[in-house]
Image 1 (spheres, rainbow, N blue to C red):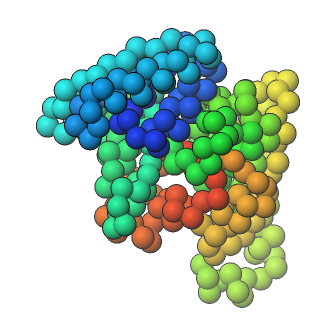
Image 2 (image 1 turned 60 degrees about the horizontal axis):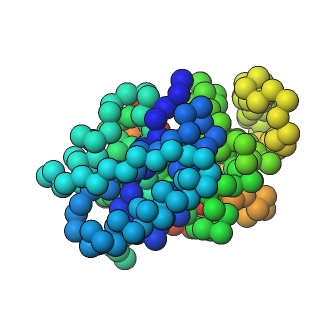
Length: 281
């Protein structure tokens, strides 16, 4: 299914970095175009916004990506304005940013991006840019597998928009165990969990190879037992020199106002590389 890509653009430097992801994703799609949406909340002057949007349009033109820019009035708030501007359904994909807005807030908790992910009105990908130098085209991608029955299916449409630039995809399956059980687990039990993890991993590999065909992407797999899911992801991201961590969001793992203990929020805060949080409807 071809999706129309919408870029929620607020005019910040972070939005410029996120825009490069949107441009690359659009260039890799069957419909290479972006609808840029800016809601006039008066954070920046109209003249500055016009200049910045013109620069984004110039980058799009160099990549052969068509652009439609819509500068819209604020209706109630930015979140509600975006909901009215972007058509509901699987045909719409909104790319937005994830960033810290103050010392007392998280990268996602309480933000417009979190609200868009929770709403499930259209597909959303919120991106935290740590390394703007990769220009929104990560070559090494880390995907932590949650063990979802659908395997890689939910991530596939997002991954395929990044895939043409990806050289290595690192698949990580963490078999989570409690801290107390982790210390005293019998060897047979540990091997059983690893076998279960590899069985799941093999199904994901089969699914990916069917989609990728003769792609040159190197697929790297690892199954580990751990009592700390966040720590293992961050360690693996550093060891593999990943340029992006791609993660799915759900109502269970999205941050709330108690964001400091939330796993996604911890990864966004401590990640050595860019992070993409996606959600289908």
